[in-house]
Length: 297
Image (cartoon, rainbow, N blue to C red; front, side, top):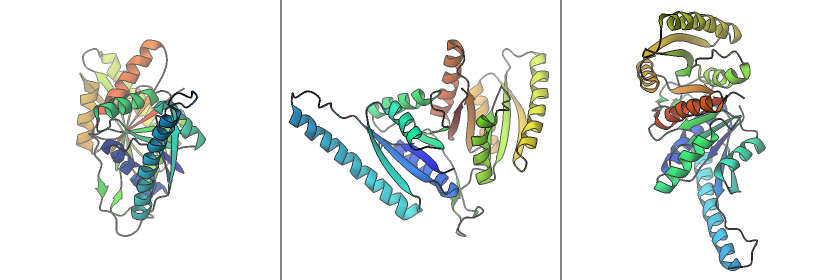
């Protein structure tokens, strides 16, 4: 894990996502690539050319100033390397471009800004990235909380105070055995010595006896596969039942001290894509903990 891409609009919630990314990067000894997308005015036509150029200069100067302050603050206080990038145009397209150009291992993004306009932009940007980026996306909503442990982690300074997610939840219904999808989750678990909780949700409104038997059998087999494939990583599995996926998962997270939730999305046919994207989007926007979304192509 070498690079963590963090888009920012300089809002309080973007800063919250950045703070999470910095704690993540400290333990991974990774660098932060801090990205801001400007909405510059086109200067192709000569009408009001000087005004347009002055406007663009003001926008760029202000963005560079904000980025420089963030970079200095993080590097001085957290000792994490920060590289800054400015792009022009569509925010989602620029984030995808930046992740490719910088070979990002993760994208960490907030969901809402501190004004009505940035709330719409950042909310739609996060939604637009779901299912499009091949880079794992960690979404930090305004409701997200995470603990900074007082216990020192391995290979850190003796003062402690490091970000240390003890539990990562993987909600699945596909029992994925594709290592390309699982590796990012396992890599984070290894980094922090976290336990991965693998849960399968059964909807009590529509489930029949067969659904319970099938899912329990598959879950048992799956935990065995994971332990064999990733020796040294702690896994535990549980079948969850309820009439609402989001609230059932949230109760489990609260009870078991889950710090990060992982979901794998599958863009199949149009209906499946809309339903799955909606489920992942709702969890990402409303979750009290950061959500890692990984797209299966």
